Length: 174
Image (cartoon, rainbow, N blue to C red; front, side, top):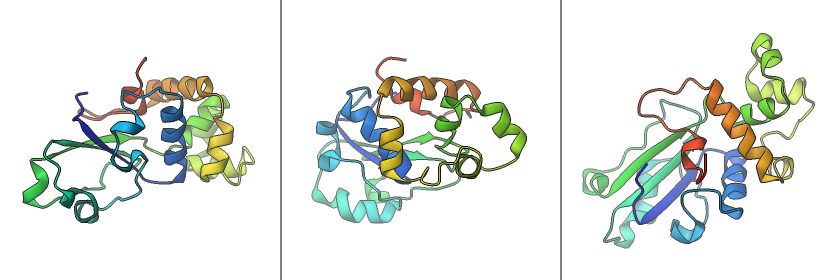
């Protein structure tokens, strides 16, 4: 994956934000906070809003927008004036980012049999009502090695579509 000089990392939710923050804080990603717009994860999911807020500042160079999301259908539309300056990279965490916790807990088979969404399985079967909260995820994955191991397991069981990226692709060392 080739990234531009400037990067914008956009996360769909609080759990995704926490995961990226942990990886950034431990220098485990192929980019750093210093390279990111505003040096933080952004929560701006709409392309037009992103364009208005960030692109109109007059960047001379290309920008890579790294979107961490669980939906393959969510579009990031930019106006024609900015499409040539922005490289959109979708990092898909389908069905949900909570799969990392299920895999770390070694409950994947049980989850598959349950027919539940990953977040619901975590809440009911793993008794983690705050599984979608930033603070819960930060504490749960406070040891980055655990997170890296879960990302690797997730990559193995994911149905990765052609041209798609996963969190594993963002790691410095795989």
